[in-house]
Image 1 (cartoon, one colour):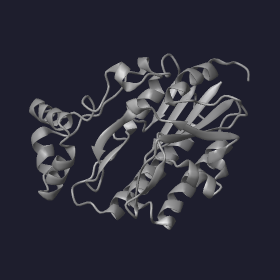
Image 2 (cartoon, one colour):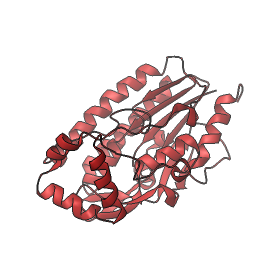
Image 3 (cartoon, rainbow, N blue to C red):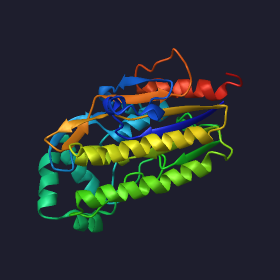
Image 4 (spheres, rainbow, N blue to C red):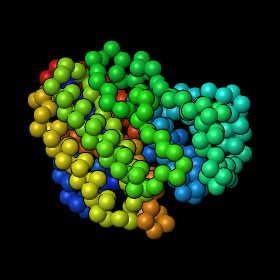
Length: 288
């Protein structure tokens, strides 16, 4: 059995229902709760204090079947820089809850470019394949968190919301072409990830047309994938969290994620770590 995973960061269950996005729904679909071990206190694009599920931690749990703290992975260990001094300062800021003040000071003084020069760019944190359900499986990976470089794009200070959204649309289009090309190639597990819905949701949740544009693109991509999938393939659509309105036009993460399958089944995930053993079970099946 083959497994194709379409991971849509920030895909919101209620919007899929509201707009009747049937390709995303598939044959069975629902929500799953996100454990607190995958949450952090942080600061959003606009400098607001928030406590919510954090993308790298949720996907770590998905890939490994273990909570991040069981793997000694957390806010302190991710997003580190080449400079030891910078990492020490970052640890101090996180430990004493100063992220809110630091982010606002950094943005106000436009220090981002200087920090990147002095401290070095953030290093991409990765999980060894051997710790994931990809171990000993022929796999293809397209832009997946904790496995790929550059899954989250970096922008210079002052980049407008319009430019950020446009750039993620362009990335989505490019990654979609890669995905459709990969479908007919030999693999047992294919992983695809896009952050488009998360970015549009956070920056433009109150803009219905902008939000619908992104969601209908995701629904259309899923439709195209289902047309091209080999017959013996299970398609899992999943998100690491949903999205809810926040301070007018913006959005923030929900405490649940979305999932759907293209097969009829009584199985339902109770949490994010449930997918790991199930994917291994599916891919080891010779007959459905």
